Image 1: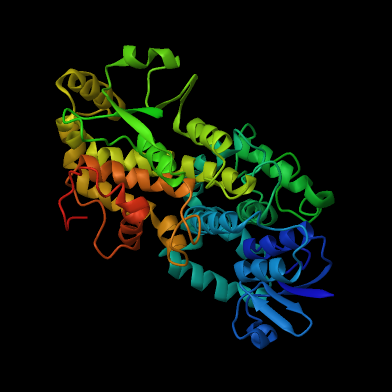
Image 2 (image 1 turned 30 degrees about the vertical axis):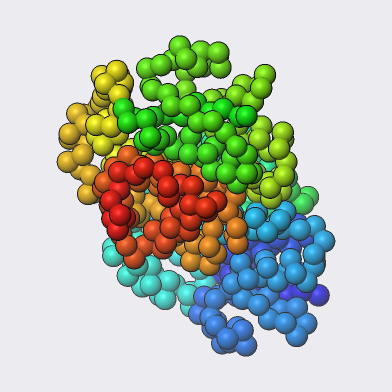
Amino acid sequence: MLQMYDLAGADESIRFSPYCWRVRMALAHKALECDFIPWHFTEKDRIAFSGQGMVPVLVDGETVVSDSWKIALYLESRYPGKPLFGCDESRALALFVKHWVERVVHPLVVRIVVRDVWERLHDQDKTYFRESREKRFGMPLDEVIRQRDQTAARLREALDPARAALDSQPFLCGQSPAFADYIFFSALQWARCASPYALLEASDPVAAYRERMLDLFDGCARRMPAAAQPGIL
Amino acid sequence: MLQMYDLAGADESIRFSPYCWRVRMALAHKALECDFIPWHFTEKDRIAFSGQGMVPVLVDGETVVSDSWKIALYLESRYPGKPLFGCDESRALALFVKHWVERVVHPLVVRIVVRDVWERLHDQDKTYFRESREKRFGMPLDEVIRQRDQTAARLREALDPARAALDSQPFLCGQSPAFADYIFFSALQWARCASPYALLEASDPVAAYRERMLDLFDGCARRMPAAAQPGIL
């Protein structure tokens, strides 16, 4: 059975890492069973065997792979059924989507959810997390959160290219979802699992897309505990 | 022989429309010969047969297609050799790239090149062009241009997702270029053909990418008259 080390909150049922969510969705896409092992930020020793200190870490027998993109390539190579990429070109374009998500979407989402993430962390993670994030943002988390509504407005505007693409197809990858969708959706799911803040407006086509993604694979992403309230987007 | 109505300057050898460039590159990709007919903004009557007033307009015997994306789909369907899209998924992801280019890249490029485009237009186009663009920007073209260096800095930052993808592959579409590359490159070629302004820094990997694109198909994009000076990026 595959194993994946998965970032967890103090309540270990809360799993919010966008990078871990990409892999979780990729595994569901390929119908691969996996044991998701809860892990906390400061438990570097528990994944030292992977040669680095971040999750996701996938363990497949003797094989250890870290980094969500490398894990996707590994899964595609080792378990080629139900492909995550339709062809070489779509894998290359999924890499562009990955960089768009990481450089445009994530920096805005993190500023919306960071204090809620902090509140949900294990006590042992809280000091590390607050100090590293306050250093990154150059301001206290409370100040980041005071700007949250403006950040959400910027995020909604930044999602415009995805919104426009979703106007003519149900998924970024077309008629059915593939890895580029899991990359993008995982940024939304990160917020949904960690924060009650309404990231999107109810009428936003991206919110309808998120619902479609939550329905996939028997609702595997919808069933996970979320901080977002039912009916709140 | 295919015909394409192609936006031209007063000097009809100057062809700068990014939408027309997409089709020109797609035709070169498929090794299809085409007669590129110079057209000016105010010559709506000359393309009235297409049922709308914008170029590119492709004429293939009895078939008339306008809109660069629809033309690409038409060419792919009618001339399936040398595909513009590797698979359905990459076509869907190319649509995301299209919207990213049109909603993020074009609005910045236009503010850098707009006065140079205006200077190169046929006299009959100049009043229409200046009035419509000043209305769009809410300010005189000279004021738009006074902000040009700041706009270029924003553009270079906005190109970050493409730059990151090009760090691990020579083209957005992977090891060889396809339609998503023509969409992105055409935004750069628009500036190169219309303006001597140095859009990119010499050390920018996106500039190296542009060189690779200019080399394609026996240098078909490099051979076209450019306002950019040799050695100026």
